[in-house]
Length: 195
Image 1 (spheres, rainbow, N blue to C red):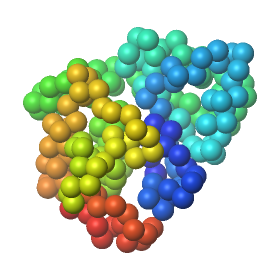
Image 2 (cartoon, helix red, strand yellow):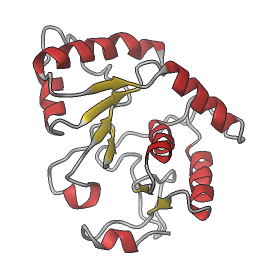
Image 3 (cartoon, rainbow, N blue to C red):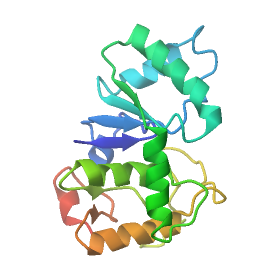
């Protein structure tokens, strides 16, 4: 299973770094798509890049995302009925939040990446994490964008990315997941470049 976050481009030569095969992809909030009922084309075009992979939307993570998430479901159901769309259960999100807060992680809301890594740990026997780096520069002190595919910056009021990263390092050291920190040089070599 290959899980991708936040509409990262599947084209433009990034396939070798981010994977061309996708089973599940997650969009944090579909609020950027206005007038979905009148103009679904931008959303449909964006989603179709991923084939029939399951789209997961944390529709109940914030109340302002719920309405647009439901509109997204309706639009995709009518235009792309083969496209599975699922919502994270609000109960699951609350349970996940309490689980990590009970282990000392204090933040307004878990990052989308951390939510999905937690979910992957429940679903998969082996979890490999790529691209989760909470700092402004990499191990060679080169600048690193928040998302490799755009220039957004993290919302430090909501997320405590360094604290999440510490939890991922702990899970890595316990053998629960494999955290890859080096850039992938080729489709097979990336497995050798982990922590």
